[in-house]
Image (cartoon, rainbow, N blue to C red; front, side, top):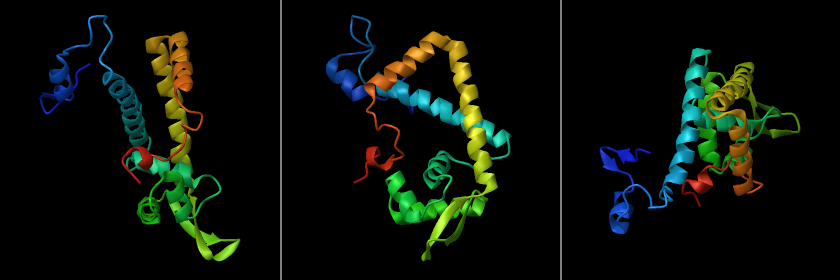
Length: 180
């Protein structure tokens, strides 16, 4: 794996301190490569998704928008609920909702159960983006299956489920990106 940023090794301090260049003599990669490889795989899927979404008529959708649209859900949500689901402040969620509204992916509507509240709902354009995303992810998974082989991909998925906590599928990215 090429651990380079601006022509410098990402983990040059760790490597120079431990005298490690390319893993230990047993052939195992250094431990820091595992999260980098997992992140690179995630990033590869997300980048390919967004390139295809752009080709299919959604050039302005960004990864954060996809998470926010998932947090809004099919039934809609308040900005405060979107923020809680994403693990960000109500103000940060409000800015994202404002951007989704400006792009035509969401709209603010009156809450039928409480006239004091506004609900954020996905528009047909937002629902289309999510439906296309699901189909594209299926296509990307099929490509990984063709590259790795279906048995190895299923094994990878099973192994990842084994080492991840049961509640790993939360939208709270802020909590692991340095939030409170």
